[in-house]
Length: 313
Image (cartoon, rainbow, N blue to C red; front, side):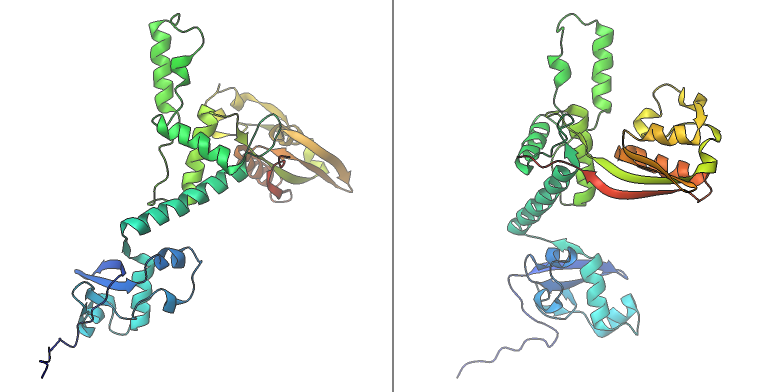
């Protein structure tokens, strides 16, 4: 007759799981999820919790099959908090323990998302055409494989003729420039895409520039000829250029036009002046603040297209 093995009632054995842990109230709580599903849930791809959780229980230790006592949950999360709400908090805020395969899948997912974002926002500055994701990927790989930057300074023109002082200043300048060392899983794809774009624009492994924004600016005609004096905040990189920006004067219309790189249309309709044109992304915030401040809310800046590009043949 087979011998029965007694297992404590608060023990549940699970295998092939992905753990999410959250420390609260001096105790660590865990939930058991299906592999790869936590990332899909957090990114919005998966919405059904039944496909994410292996079991709707909270554990002190999944590996030991030890579920969390009710009194521990009440002490840590509150006496009237339902178990489902506790599970949701752990799922959304907890630290995910991933295996090598899951970590690689996560890294590949973030990598592809970064490349897609960058490819949609950078263009060839001459043709204004977008690059393929493959070309962007190759350019970023070139940056990361060379320590985050393309060492153009070492290959510079007139090699061997520069003075020591110039060489030192070039190296200092290079250290201050944005670098790219590859994708990580601890930062959002959006923030990493911004870092990647800064590095590509700074080092130019391929000729790139930010795709321009297409805007409509409207302003009452009786304000256009008013004189203004103050800095032109077109781009953060321009603020340190000379210090002459503080001395710039002109009319409201002159200042608005100074933000616009290329005018598409310009017209006066009744008592309102309207211009549609292309603006560098770095100038958008300054333009919006200027129009809002000078017109006291009567003028408007509308985004017609976040990134104007031309598709390749």
